[in-house]
Structure formats: structure tokens, C-alpha cells
Length: 460
RNA sequence: GGCCUGAUGGCGGAGUGGUUACGCAGCGGACUGCAAAUCCGUGCACCCGAGUUCGAUUCUCGGUCAGGCCUCCA
Image 1 (cartoon, rainbow, N blue to C red):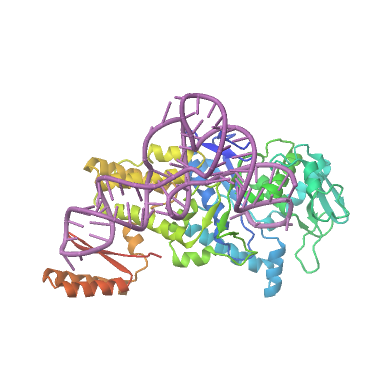
Image 2 (spheres, rainbow, N blue to C red; image 1 turned 180 degrees about the vertical axis):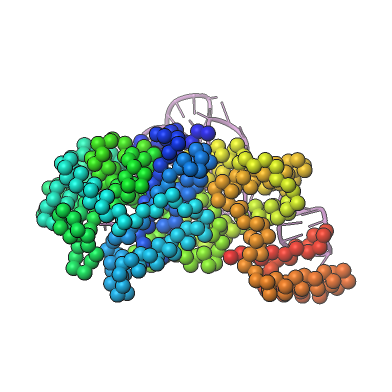
């Protein structure tokens, strides 16, 4: 296996070689839990879940350590808690639970670690102290700031030389900053906001230091892979790197930086600050999680993805095709349990999920038309391949009939039987009337030599 | 203004210096009482201009258009 990944730092695909194959480390920036996450927030969840699964397959399940953090200290959380008149934990616990439940429905494996900023406070403060000792940070006016001139490579990840950044700065520079690009490591809380004791007075951490500290505490520095949305390259990841390198005196921080492209909704960027939000939580009521996962992986992870209802419908039909092939091959005993070579090769080429998914259709075709031997092999490879990245994990019957309760199922079966009788009697008008009834129930009938089978036209 | 991406058929979306993406939708046929599903066949593309080349959608340059970041949005 030769996994090649595109590294934002070098802007090219490189062979991935972990520092220690027995302990592969990956960190991905997770959500700020103040509301239900919109579907764009789940793109990195799904993308890096694919990478997590691929790494586990390559190095062993226990050899891959994956940390995805939760930001639970934030202005927006404070605002939400104040609105509801509750403690921030009430807000963060609620939305973290929803987030994890939604992620699970999207087929994402739980990360090895899910550190929370509020539970990493000691490590955050300790790291800031170290940065101050290393002359990479300074206290001023109740704040602690990172001194960007202390790190010669500052700007390398995002490709922004420090002097250009200063020239382009549009924000008002706080008077206590030595350099305009310096950023906050610790700041005083406003009245009523949560605060923690520190050597610099009561306050709370800046956003960037949280991640660096959580990485160091859960995985140790440096790590093999750091992921996140492309919008985080600057300033978040640039700052993380500066902090990590200056705190540890190790130049790597993360050997690879991976960034997923944005999800766009119509002409506008999809974000919570605009009104055009599609919450994954709501989408999951209308579509199977697997279909949403498919839609999120249908294009390359680095390319922007246009999100619309067509995309979801197409994703569901694509899965119908694959599940349909499995359903028709229910009596075929799967042979071989390895993903196909072509499928793996596609994924190993910087997670080319589109190419990999095309391979699944090729296997489905073989499963429909091959010899008995070919079918057995195709079924085994199709399942092993798809399962590797979290697809086709359901029973085909469940996929097509999952949302049907026993009462409705009995009614449908009754109608199917009645229609079979009408068909045997060649009473076509009656048979068609019954089919219309079934259609009204969202049921599609498929006549076969062994009698009629059915499935839901739209699964939830 | 600075930095950085991308532009592929009706839609989504890979890839390649000369040959099939793939899925959905369309068309013709098989199967079916009619359908559906499936199978067989089939039409439709590589932003514009110049260059390199025997040959470019694929490489280079220019242009146009679109998008991202430069503000604690994944």
C-alpha cells in the first residue's frame, strides 16, 4: 500500500510515511457546539473518517490514533447560554450529543479521542507558560499574545509572508499588540462569561492554543496528519503550527496538512451566519445517512462541492443501484473479502473517492451479469470495498424496506398477494388498481418469475 | 489590493500527451399483460487565444469567468 496525500504545506501529493507505523496520529478540527451543525460541517467528518478507515486498514485498528476536538468555549456558546439562561455546559452537552449522533448516522466511526477545550485547561495554560518562557509570547494588559516575529516560518503554511499580512491587515490593531499579526493566547473574560484562573488573571484561552494543547495532550507532538476545512488554513492552522513549534522546539508539528474544500449552497457559501443553512440533523429525517455520506464523498475532498437536493437524490439512486444488485444476488455466497485492487488504488491516490465509487459500479455490473464464480467474487469485493469506506453496511432488505413498520408491512404484503391473485386471473385492471394503491404508499412493485417483490421508492 | 484554487457532455463528477470514466437523466431494443428492476446498444464534453508537439481536453503563457482566504465559519 502506497498512500499518497496532498499536503497543504508543500502543495503537492507525497507518499505518506508515518513517523511510527505502530502509532499513526491524526487530528482534525471539530465543531464549536452551540447549535446543530449544518451539513457542511460534516464534510470533514466524513472525509477524514474515510482516511481514518483507510489508515486502520493499512496499519491496524489499534495503531491509528485519531483525535477530533470539540470547541466548547466560545462567544457564540456564551451568547446561546445567556439567551437560554443556562450554564454553557447545558448548551455544549446538548449539541455535542446531537453532533455525535448525527456523525454516527453518517457512518463516521467515533474518533479515538474527542478532547474538549474546557477539559484541557491545565494543558492550555501550561503550554502558554512554556511559550512565554521561550520568548514566543508575552503578557500585556491582561492578555497573553503570541509574538509572530519569534517564529521565522510564520506564514509558510498559508503562503503569506508576515510583511504582506501586516500590509493587508484591515482590522484595528489592539494597542497592547507588539506586532499587528500577533494573536491572542489568553484573554480576560467579559463579565458573566465563564473564566478560569491563570498566572495572568482570570480569563479564557484563545481559539488556536486550544487545538495545539489538545493535540499535545491526546496525541503528543508532532503528529502525522492534521486535517480540517480549507478555511482554517489561515489563521487557525498557521497559528497552531507556530505555537506548537515554538512550544516544543520541534519543527514538524504535523507532517501532513490536509484540507477539505467548502460545501457551497447555490451561489452562496453555506454557513451558519447566512440563512441558507441545511442542518444535517434535519436532512437525516428525510434521507438515509448513507445517502448524505455518499453525496459528501461524490467529489474529490479538496474540490468545492455544490450542495443541492439533486445531489442527494442522485446519491440515493446510486445507492439504490448498488443495494439492488446485492438484493438480487441475495443467494450468491460472497467469495473473497478483500477490497478490489482498483478500488484501493483510487483511495490511495489522495482519497479519490469518486474514482473508487466508480469501481463499485463496475463490481455491481459483474455481480449482475457474471458467471457464478465471477458473481461470488464480485459480491465479496463489492462488500469489502464499500464497507471499507462505510457504505453498503445495511442489509439490502433493510435499505429498501427500512422505514416500514410491521402494520404497514402486513398491509403491503396483503396488497401484493391480492395483486398476484388478480394477475393469475389475468384481471389486469384490478392488478393495476392495486399497484396504484401501492404506489400511493410509496411502494414500488417488481414482478419476477418467483412472484412480485417490492421496495420503497424513497427510503428514509 | 495581496495570496490561492478551479473551468470537462442535460446534471453531478473522475481522468489522460494519441484509446471507455462512472452515476443520474435521454434515446432504441430485450424482458413484462402493462410497468418497475435488470440486461444489450446508443447520442452528447473537455472556457477562449497563442505556443511546445507528429499529435493537447491533458504541458506552457496570456485572457475571460467562477470560487476561496486575507475578520475565532468545516
